Length: 314
Image 1 (cartoon, rainbow, N blue to C red):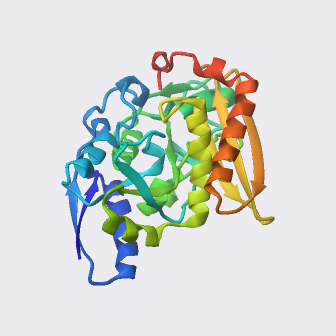
Image 2 (tube, helix red, strand yellow):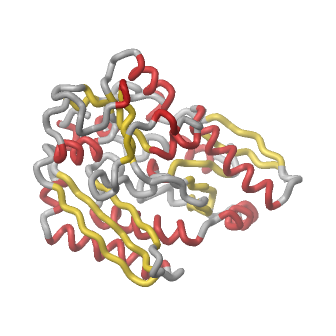
């Protein structure tokens, strides 16, 4: 059986797509694959902040359109890039075993966040990161940085920034873990929903492809991301908002969900954790996310989210 696979063309995206392909080859070594490179809105616009582009799913929209137009059989995403409302004809059929969820600091001279000199320029494309980082240090110069991972690292090396904040997962997938200066604890810099997770999306109507993709779906990761995305959906936000969420299963077999909402100036950060017994009930996982979101709403989250996210410099 031959598959056409939609992917963005960056080195990280292709690495992730090949990770999915290798998992599918374990099911049947006779499967063959053709990667179709697709350029997203987020790839085209390299100057605006993610929130400033004004389109939800800037790294997803064109890939979904390729699915709907039957140009490809399935597409591979970084789940953190996917809005909570995806195309009505599509579904996330599998999520793979999760890698590192934390954000990290990469800096010149391997200086950690606490020891960066006041006024140092810190590059990140994420408003979520900026708001939380400001709550820890408001005397740094947070600046927008765009481009794929190697491009961002090159900008750091060229002296355009003193440090940059990235997802650990991307660096680890490209064998660049040695660049990491510091891992941020999720209780100080809460990652976005879905970080560290690869998602495979296909048409709901394509029963044959859907059935194959389900073989590589990880039930534990599925529970985690269901709770995280339910939390995000209840708050009405996406990757362009200062919202963080991450879930994990502990040694007591409980599904824990940490949620975070921050003000644009970093003066207010609301975090809370809820948990319940881990099981495969989608309803229970979604309920956990909704309940946590309501707790944050009752503690002022919507007021923080009502601020104009386009007004902040990333």
